[in-house]
Amino acid sequence: MREFEALLENFWILKEREPELFQKIKDASSVLKPFIENKLGYRLLINPYLIKMEKLPGRAEAWMGIQQFDTAMEYGLLCLLLVFLEDYGQQDQFVLSQLTEFMQSTYPGEEKVEWTLYRHRVSLVKVLNFAEEMGLIKVNDGENSDFTMSTETEVLYESTGISRYFARSFSRNILSYQRWNDLENDEWLDLDPDRGAVRRHRVYRRLFLSPALLSEGPDDPDFLYLKNFRSMIQKDGEDLLESSLHLHKTCALFMLQGEKNFRETLPDQKVISGIAIQVCTTIRELIADRKLTISDDDTILLSRDQLERVIDLCRERYVEGWSKEYREMPSAKLYQEIISYMTGFLLLERLNDQELKILPPAGKISGNYPQDFGGN
Image 1 (cartoon, one colour):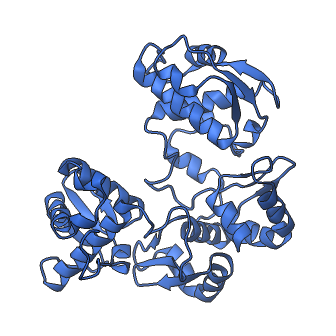
Image 2 (cartoon, rainbow, N blue to C red):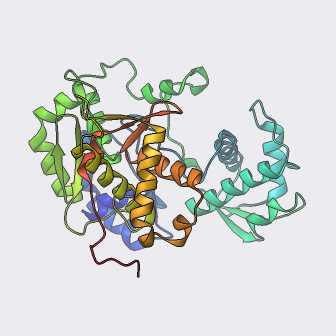
Image 3 (cartoon, one colour):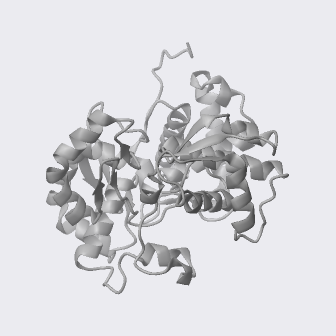
């Protein structure tokens, strides 16, 4: 269902940017709301400016977050930007120096903001680019990137007035929270996490938002729910995502049907996606040759050196099909990029600096170039 897919893939749908899609989702909201509220436990926000399905993860995962951000400071600067914008309504203007002065005087982190530092200026530019991309602000005059070169740069901005809808509401004062888990548990309060609606919402969220749901043992309540309500979940996947539910002993995931695709799926057209598949295929060959052993939980323990040798073998076999970027990439960087990519899709888990675990979803994918492939 295209309307649901759009809500799932996008943070929000802005009427100004996508008026036709906005109207289609609004028209379909009476059909979507029961599933969104009862199965996912989400709130569907609809107002004259935007439509937003407030997506909270069933469980925090390493791959989640804002992909453009690399440091905690960037998240802090984004929060300060949202606070700053509270004083500005739709079409109200401000200049960059007003924002930088506010951030420098109010940033609460241990490391103080110092705009004479290049990396701090780069962090702010990332935040401003993200805010512009999300529709929180508009640039009326100037370029965000110019600030990386000079602290004297001025840019004229306009508030769109929708920043107030960006952050979600919390049930308690978040200043009382001590750990990130407190944020994760905020929604459930004192409810039993392994029963009723709480468990149902968590299972559906993990299936619909994450690459896979991994079993944590024979008594895993989420996996027991999956087994008991398999038919219902299968139907929901078919109706809303054109996907089929694959339920195995240690993992469950939705597999897209035919040529169906989303913005972030495996495989896709990225070269690194193909390399990850080649790594998984090579690991299957090593298992068949009894050079790697599958544990009782369908995982494979191996050292980082072993995985690096697998990647080197893939490079020898398939390098002609790789893009110039990956053909010429230094080995250390190639290892890191592939490990990060595969971790994001729950194909592997980093246990420590020297040990890794290949996860069950890696056994679901394989692929090779045609035998007559020549790299052309």
